[in-house]
Image 1 (cartoon, one colour):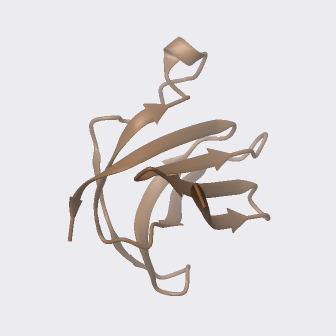
Image 2 (tube, helix red, strand yellow):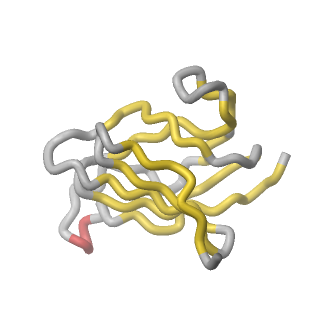
Length: 102
């Protein structure tokens, strides 16, 4: 398998998958953003954003800090899986890479 879908949230219209060491988070919700979304990653470590469709050059509103490092933790609302807490604006895609493995 080339990629692995590892999280689908049908209620909120979010999809996440991994490919070549990258984590892709798509928010297909037309109107709802999620300020503290718990995204399972299955691997403990530190992640940073390498692509953000919410940047001004793509017609976005630049609501995401791309210089921030996301550290994994136990996700209380996702069956205690390992993951990050991230802001996911509506109608965006974020691509993250692990920069340090725990």
